[in-house]
Length: 151
Image (cartoon, rainbow, N blue to C red; front, side, top):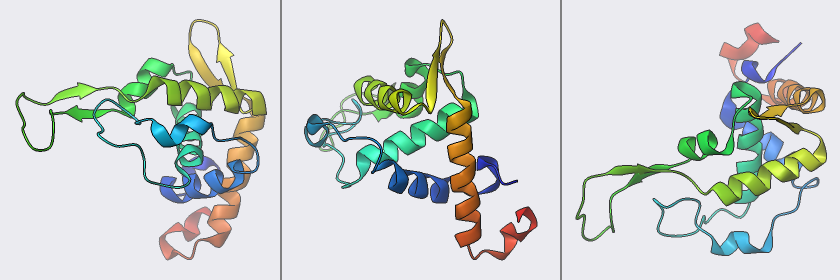
């Protein structure tokens, strides 16, 4: 049985994002918002919302139960002032908590994630099965000899 740990994360996220496009809806405000305080522009990817939701689903499955604050820290980066004038030393800023919270709520509506009172969000059995099914399909599609030991 193939699990989400047996395939490369980038390939798994790509496939999960493609499957989530049919299941969740991208909010209208996504094209105008930044993904964190350390960014200057909104994301330029067309499928940003679905990639972020797929990445969140994988992180919750891997590290759960996990809260929005810890996820925001993982999606953040160094804020150094503007690109032209760096006037202060780098300082870590968290990612957008609204993007994370709304994506997790959508995944909760689909039944992939549940809220553990006082602990954060964790993956459900349905979410784990979804990720494992996708991982199996990804492993079948990969043509990489170093991964044959998992098949």
